[in-house]
Structures are given as structure tokens and as C-alpha cells.
Image (cartoon, rainbow, N blue to C red; front, side):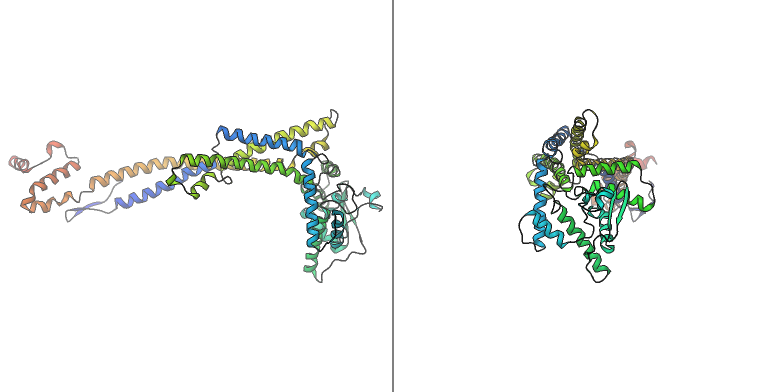
Length: 465
């Protein structure tokens, strides 16, 4: 770096300010440090105990899933979720004005209050012989009973046109004039749309725990995941795309699973061990970091903000890696159990229905989300690593630049030394003036043998001349 240097009134004057350059370099160093530090937030900082505890949590919740969730009809947790949904159905009926007693009475009240034209059950009507509609499958085959966007669309369409739409055998089937007694309320299109949506929602609530005429556990509304097999067939039919054998086979599998009791209530039961796994891992992370915080932080330096930043178990790569390990362990145990039970049920041949009845779709979905997050963070880390490596090299250059500026600042910070001119004018201060001239010469790297340190050296110098 070359600075424009002039001397005015016995002082050095710089066209560029060294202090300003130092301030700018310090700011650049801070920016580079932030770039280098940003990569740390993308890389997990798990130790061996973190991995062990996360895997243990996944294994424990896998055991809960195997023995307490199992499959429909053999699920202790499923019985709890069935009762919970029944109570919520009765609570909703009370909000709507029901004053009776018993679950079936509440369901019947809601069915009458939220009347729809597409509630054919296949009991004693032509639909049972035409496309095998029955009380055990009509909630699945009826598109408007599916808790999906496609189900909402066909519910509104059926209410406006007094029709019913079903999926059976890979085909979309429409019944015209489904219910002569049905009339959609509302005076204009917006009000009718609102009433149609309310009817769809209210009727789904009434069917969560089965129909009013159902026996035993009843057939609830389908799982949103498996109901998408109907949506795929509908979309392909509407677009004129042939429905493949694979689509039909998956749809038939979903129907078999539903008829075996795999509905929204059972899927809620499957979510319980997944939720426990999630909470336990986050708690383990927070508690371990909390102990570490109090062990490594002096009492005077403690604060709630610092503690939260240290223990917060939500938005950092470390806890997310622990969750990936925990949910991965859970899925390994769940898939292993489902596979073994599938072969046992098939007497040596693989039974896909038994496998998917026991497969925890919620756990698989949560593990897939973790894997997606891991891949995304790995990509971000790969990109940030390049920026951090470049910033590391740039920081070395800037640090060398700052070191050079500090040397320049030291070499030319001589305002006190340059006062020797005034000292020489004052005869009483000539000794101090000689000392300042010697220091100034030494600062400018003048060879020691050529430095004039006192009046005698100056006299001797001029006598030689």
C-alpha cells in the first residue's frame, strides 16, 4: 500500500487516513468471521452419547408401536383413540344443539343435521350389485367422504348437482339424482358454497366414529394418505389418461386395508409413538445442554437469552440429526416387525395387506421429512463450505493488511517527536530536542552509527564538513 505523504508545518500529512483504513479493515474482518462462523450452524455437533440416546428413544418408541399400536382390532392405543374420537363427535353434536345420550344418538343427529345426497351405503340398493358398494367400504369408495381436497371438490359438486361419485375397479362412477329429498340451502352461489362446505365438514365429523347404523367399532373416514389412491384414479380419468394396473392394485390394497379397520382413528393411534419419540429426543437435547450451560457458564454471565440459545431444541442442526437417528431407528424396528408379520400371515409368502396394516405410515413420513432436511442441509453446507474457505483465505490477506497498517501507523505517528523544532528554539530544552531527534532517526531505521544523539555529536559532524 502506498500512501501520499507530505510535510506541512513540521507535521506529516497523509492523503489517506491510516485510522480510517484500519476501521474499514476491522469491519471487513467481522464480515468474514460471520461468513466463516455461518457454516457451523449447518453442521451437527452430536457427540457419542447424543447418538446413543437418540437411537435408544427410537428403539423404545418402536417397542411401543409394535406392542401397543400393532394393527386395527389388536391395538390398545387404537382403543384409546377410538374413544377420543367418539367423545369429540359427541362434543361437536352438543355444539350443534344435540341433547341426547350415547354415541350413536350423536352420530344420527349430525347425519340429519348435515344432510348430503351422496350417503349411499349399498345396503339394499342397486349400487351393491353394480360396483360392490357395502356399508364396510362406502366411506372409502365415496369420493365426498374422503378427507382430501378432491373429496371436498366432489362433495360440493354432488351437493350442487344432487349426484354421487364413487371409485371402484379403477373407474369413476357417477349416480344421477342421488337423493330426491335433498336440497342445498342458500339463496345465491356464495351462500350455497358456504353451506356445501359446512355440510361436508359436519358430515365427516358424524362419520369419524362410523355410521349411526353401524355395529361394533364401525367404519370411520379413510386415512388421508390412502385416500389419495382414489384421487389419482379420478385425476387420470378426468384427464383421459389410462389407469394402470399398478394404480388399480394400490387402490385395491388401500380398500382392503380400510375394510380391515385402518381409518383416520387408527392412523391417529400410529402418530402417538412418533410424537413421543419427537418429544423425548428434543427433551434429551435440551436437558443435556442445560446441564452443560450451568457447568460451563459463570454465575455472573448467565442470562435467560443465553440459556435459551444454548438449550433451544428446535432450529439447530444437532437436534435435527438426533431426530433423524431416532426416527430412523423407529422405522427400522417398525418395518422389520411389519415384514416378519407379513410373512407369518402369508404362511411363508408375503402378505402385503398385513404388512401395510402394521406399517406406521406416520413414522415413515416423519423419517422422510428428516431425510429431506439432512439432504438440504448437506447441500447448503457444501455451498457454504466453499464460501467459508474463500473467506478464510481472504481473512489472512486482510489480517496481513491490518498488520501493515499498524506498522505504518507506528512508523509515522510522530507528532510528539516532531516538536523538537520548537524545543530547539528554546535554549532550555535543547537536551530534550536532541533526544527527540535521535528517537525520530531510530524510528526511521537510520543506522545507529549515523544517529546524532547529543550536541557533541552534532558539533563533531559539522567539524568534519
